[in-house]
Image 1 (spheres, rainbow, N blue to C red):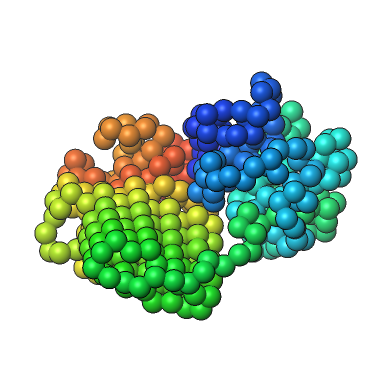
Image 2: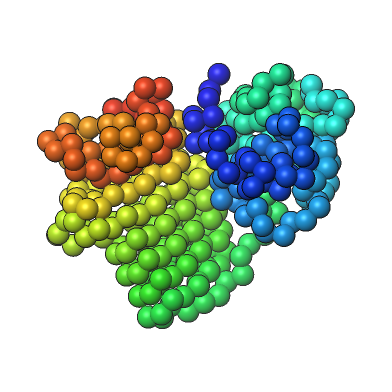
Length: 336
């Protein structure tokens, strides 16, 4: 059975503890319930904040979530809750809720959950035509809403949101927050420490200079935060999260190797089943080392130059060659 780390889940993080999970705090019960896990997983994925003011509708039994959260569908989608009514498909007397990690090519969905079949943590893939699939109710966490377009790029600190189509947004200077909506968007941070959110669609996110945070959202996204100026050691540290879909994390391209010198990218949610890391040159020019050699966790992996192991280009969080969640092969790396 897959482990939590296969999905980038850290059950010891604050997302699953009373201090960071209002359901845990509200239940005041030592059992780790399915509701507590599902809520914490959504926080961990960045889909909402624990202090977002969602109120009492998050409390209650798992089988009530489809109604309390404002609607559901029979169509599975990644980054949604999946709910079963009481006594449906093996659920108990109060129902069951889990989190949809991905929807597979054959129409099945893979979910993570807690307190199922006597397991503290569990994951399973549910196929169409089964009782579990046919009785499942899927609750989009975003509620299906589209952000309101707005904002104008200036040389200051801007907050810009695209429309429902395919947007091309160039945010100019400043520390900007740029969000796509639906559509296949291209977002450019340019100079400054920017936050880019692709949201739905197959998006291209480019951070350029500064310490940027890129988040793909749903869809097959390309995340390229580094600005190659011909000089290394510019101190750039970028954070890349692909979220759902088959995403490409760029740490090198036709321009050369990114993040040389005192710079690196943090790849927060690499998924070996779907994602790929783009590099410049052959894979033999790189090596994978345990993250604790570079001040990170032993559960992380550092991507370094094989000719100089002190040259760290990226840290891939919560993946390791030891358990096969990142592989030194063309399955996980694409040479430009």
